Length: 136
Image 1 (cartoon, helix red, strand yellow):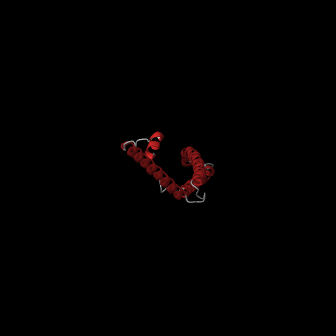
Image 2: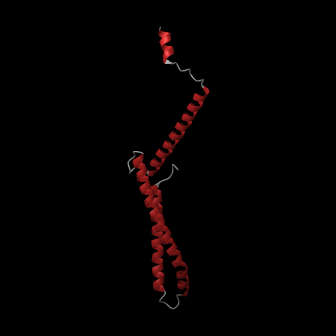
Image 3: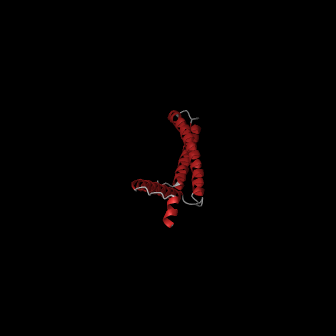
């Protein structure tokens, strides 16, 4: 988890968007070529590519929405851990891992203290009346 980087995800999404734009350009060029009588291969190509392109753009848009949501969550996490929102996302994940490890160590320490307290013999309680007798 420490290797996650929102910046790298953003670059990947941009590459996908560029690829989808290239497919759109090919579709437009092939559509124009369909006016020619000898363009039967273009029709077959378009019949396969149009549904693919439609699915691609839908998936890329969904991915972009998820990414935007992740960025918002990362900013909220940054604020929660008192980090600057401009902090690299891998740093935020590192802080989260450190925090989780501290919580686990704290839980373990608490359990050890509870076990140690159970093993100790109970200390006798001194009553106030006994304290008065001892001082006389």
